[in-house]
Length: 357
Ligand SMILES: CC(C)(COP(=O)(O)OP(=O)(O)OC[C@H]1O[C@@H](n2cnc3c(N)ncnc32)[C@H](O)[C@@H]1OP(=O)(O)O)[C@@H](O)C(=O)NCCC(=O)NCCS
Image 1 (cartoon, rainbow, N blue to C red):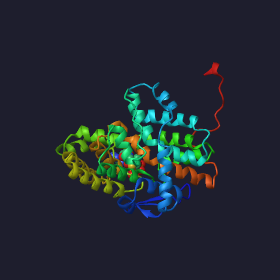
Image 2 (image 1 turned 135 degrees about the horizontal axis):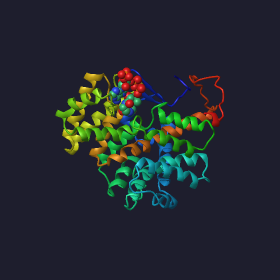
Image 3 (image 1 turned 45 degrees about the vertical axis):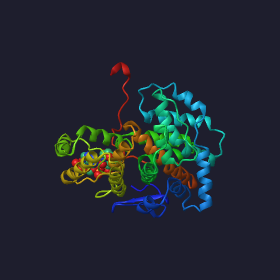
Image 4 (image 1 turned 135 degrees about the vertical axis):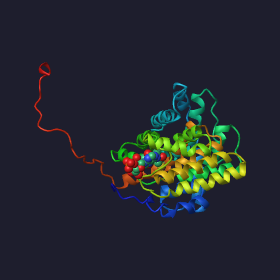
């Protein structure tokens, strides 16, 4: 059901995806995180000067206020990183009340990598690592995670995945953000709701679930039996299927190429690549479901050394850009969402006093 007009992005049943009119393939090959974020937020590619200003605004706002660390230190160690992130993000809204609407948007996009990685670190008793203002968004994630600078190639790989994750028209979390925006609530409230929607395994949580599944299957030879078993039990195969893409998810194709390159360059994960291909082949043969982005993003993150539970928070690091764009678009021509539902319950019942029930 089409619920709104949007100029931000469009995924097509033919396996196409555009951001503001540009194909995802073009952006994947040629663009950077910051340039793509500018495009999604502003509807056009930046000039060199605009990009420099935008990038420097992001980097200057990338550090977390000390109050966030205080909140994080009160959370239980075993908490899921998505729950920690949602709590920390929500707390940020209480701290940044004084910022202008434009600075708020820059701030939440800029702080997301540090929120994701440092909330994970601190709740597990590790020291936070401050983001480096000399690094881009992709490189900073790996830097804060490891405490040392990643290679240029690894940073490039991480940035490609972030570009693919950045926006996807009216997916569940973007729609959630839009509904909250339509009530005129602030951008922190709307994106906190977006994080809540993203956590579920049918949406963003699928990358972590896909990696858990790949770990359980273990090797390519086990793929067919495992998938058959899941299908026989009417269980979902995580990282497969999509509401829009029925034959191919263009983001999965690009991430698969990236995985192949990552394996070739690092010499790591060859067996994992073979396992992914074997699962993809058998799921297509048996159920005609295509692999989605989550299925191939998970092994890329794994080879880059990202802990499994951080896979979904990393999705948020990038999708925050799309959420902010949807928040803005909704407010440009706002009317509160109030959908109808078909009532299928009973009617005309007579109230019976509790003493007679
Ligand atoms: C993404 C998803 C939620 C889309 O749901 P949807 O639009 O309702 O799915 P469809 O209408 O295309 O489902 C068609 C059929 O395929 C089945 N199906 C869809 N995805 C499946 C999966 N991953 N594993 C097993 N069966 C699946 C459905 O159960 C349905 O079967 P039925 O006709 O026997 O009832 C769904 O494919 C799914 O749960 N995938 C796994 C989670 C995931 O990877 N999410 C990330 C998406 S980017």
